[in-house]
Length: 368
Ligand SMILES: O=C(O)CCC(=O)C1=CC=C[C@@H](O)[C@@H]1C(=O)O
Ligand SMILES: [Mg+2]
Image (cartoon, rainbow, N blue to C red):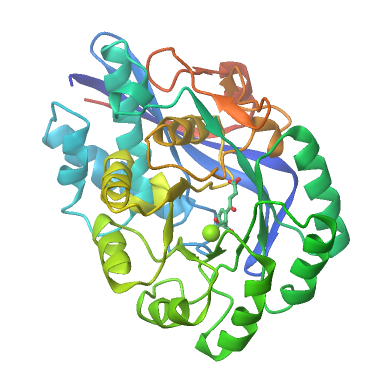
């Protein structure tokens, strides 16, 4: 890969409505766009998905920018690579900072797929032409949640994920089930519980949830294994899985029955695919998580979700779920609950340069 330059843009756009969790609210999204251009003038794009503050993982937009500008881009300048698969190994000398790594690594994948005139989904071994779409309801009242569920089901989404915590669990889920007894429903706790809550979590078994996501501590796999033995509802891990080895250990240990794979959280597409392959061989279902992202990351998620083990609809919703106007063209849309996988080379979407300029905060170019 003969890289000529890497450009880092910081953008900011308000969400159509706030995304509320028990850990905080996201109203305005700041994101990082990485553009890697080769000597033939072909550009690949990646997106940094860390939030502005470290409420979900330890990374932030600022730490990602530091890692990219001062560590990862200089590393790539010093050690040219031939294939995107090599980026993961090159970056492994740097501990964690997975979202910063993924921002650059995914851009290299897009560039490589475009240089081979191949869709990224095919390049990584994807087999699907359409992917099933789910959506997240993240609000603070039962009435608002019911209203949003109705709207999203009308739009065709195939499953709903709600946010839950000790102030919003049994009666909240009971009310949703009263209205929608057969709805494919999952609940994400973002670590709101401890093992003291086993009885409380056991009581939720009656709602036939597809899974409870990350009920216990963000860095735990030990206590999740204890909990999984006590409850019938499958546990899905999100925050606890930041690498292939985490996934392997969690599965060997019985800490979860499924995994939410987020490209940013695990440091890139290569690691995401390794986790997928491991789970697929063992019949462990995986699904693609979201990061309230802009269109570039959404496009990478679509490519990832074409792999055969992604058997559960992911948090890959339409561009219009969060944005008045997205930064890609065409925007991601849902038809009858599915997203059509683009056939154009790379991520398969163009960049909406006009929108990107409109929401641009800063830009820096690194010449190789
Ligand atoms: O991007 C989406 O569509 C939903 C994203 C989403 O649910 C999450 C993103 C980031 C942190 C969270 O609270 C939550 C999650 O934990 O999966
Ligand atoms: Mg989650």
